Image (tube, rainbow, N blue to C red; front, side):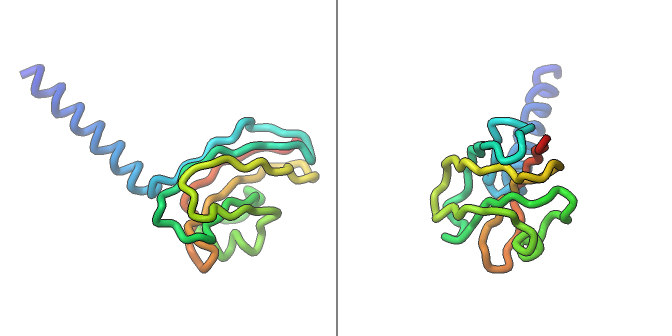
Length: 124
């Protein structure tokens, strides 16, 4: 009985991990730091599915901007870089000069797409 409960628990955990991976579409990001000086360098390691458009992009957007819409993020991005059909890599960005909270946000396309991942960092 205990063995079947452990097996059911393991199956449940694995299924939840698959749901999380499916929801993110295989997109992920990790920054080398969570705080940076104004104008300092910050590097983002990223992965993306090969199904993303050539013009999929990662940009810096103020954290106060609502999440989800690529078009909205595109109106407020401070800088950005295209993924160019690569499925992994790293980009080094220059942090904004104004102190505050910002996000790296990844988008599946630059043509009215959606935000698929984000991470927050502070400029201080």
